[in-house]
Length: 114
Image (cartoon, rainbow, N blue to C red; front, side, top):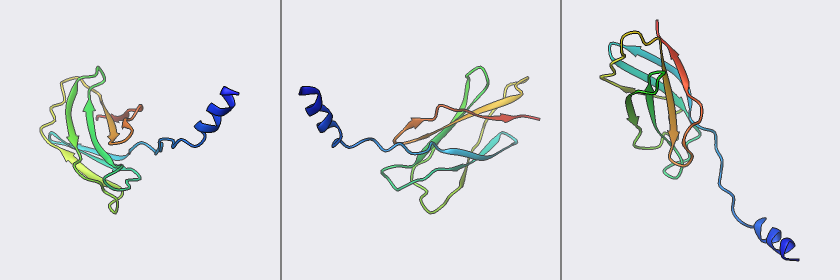
């Protein structure tokens, strides 16, 4: 009886909305500046892509770009980060993205370097 009542109550609880993580559409790196084009189903201040970070393959952070507001009507959108110093011998960069609801995405975007 208790289990049935608990189940009946649980079906009425609100569930968290699980949206798609921000998606890296394009990247460009030139003279110490990296530009990342993201898409995300921003809904406003309640849920939006709020940053990205670039790493070397060994996990060293080269910089973080905070996104200070939603981009509901600007999708996809591009933001840049300057003064990115890529260490000698690094052949690829890893970019992770986040949104203000779901946090950091599990997957990293791999940017091969020429």
